[in-house]
Amino acid sequence: MPYTVILKKGEEKRLLAGHSWVYANEAARIEGKDANGSLAEVRAADGRFIGKGYINHLSKILVRIFLRSDEQDDEALFLARIAEADALRRRLLTDCCYRAVFAEADNLPALIVDRYGDYLCVELLSLGMDRRKDVIVSALVRHFAPKGIYLRGDAAVRKKEGLPLENGVLYGEVPDRVPIEENGVKMLVDIKNGQKTGYFLDQKENRAAVRRYCRGGKVLDCFCNSGGFSLCAASVAEEVTAVDISQSALDQVRENAALNGFSNIRTACADAFAYLREARAAGTRYDCVILDPPAFCKSAAEVKDAYRGYKDINISGMKLVERGGFLVTCSCSHYMTLPLFEKMLRESARESGKTAKILEVRVQAPDHPALLCAEETSYLKVFVLQIV
Image 1: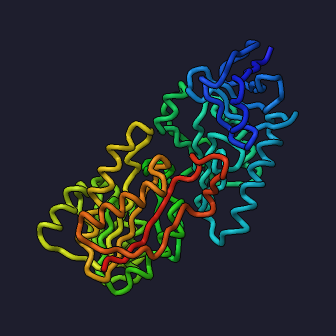
Image 2: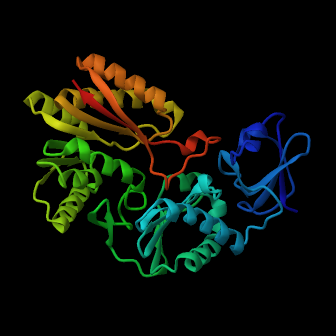
Image 3: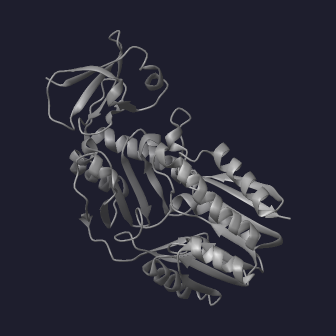
């Protein structure tokens, strides 16, 4: 007998508004018996049908709803959802590198599909989605006809779902480096070993936008990873310094710079916090400083410490910018909300003795859509400041 999750009184409101997550502490009781990871029906305390989704007794997110009627979780459904998600991207984008499926935002919770030309990189971040792996791969092959599909199964959240951390080819063949072109810049993406699915596609349009602030100038790109911002900057800047703590990431920066014939990028393998402080002490100045750190907080409990970390690098960043120059500063944690991030920047400006103008406030690229009913899907914020 399939599972039925009966919610506590009032817990259905968020779900009826379109949110998909049912937390374990929102359930009054669970009826029926089935395999963990199977479809479970969710009902309000008064018996109203809310929807169906995959259940996981090991996770704080008990059920992730994605069926709101009598639909079946068969290949036809996955194919239709994937096609609908991809149709949006094809309408908005002109290249072949984008996030084709963005989990909850595309009504396929815990499924991430990034397209890099003829290759797909997939994340299966829940037990239920992992159990449907073969069906999902079949649907992806039918829709995209890719040369290869690679599973990135090393995200920490898989442990919370009771899943192993494992990477591997799911279909066809996948090379060690996948060639792409973004914003007119050629790159080789390591989808097997790079962070996340190999590249941060959510910053694509923001990388293009910063070119206007880098023209003819001296640029510092901290937490550069494989060089997305650095390469875009180098296409218009006099010189770019790319800083990252990972030597392998910097090797990719140099490889990608050579691919484009850029000779104006130098790399520095260093902890960005320390590098910023040392540059301040040395009196170094830049026309544009870019700060795109990893998420400093992955839970609400870490926000206080993360706030201090963001403040540290932004005070340093502001002090390194020449008068009239620019600071491009980012946060990719949804716990660091936009109002909180802006508050931190105000404090940073005051404590650094700088006056800053907000020129732009940007978010994640449109191939990473956010649901108004699910604030967790809205995570990236980018402030462009002029320091005067």
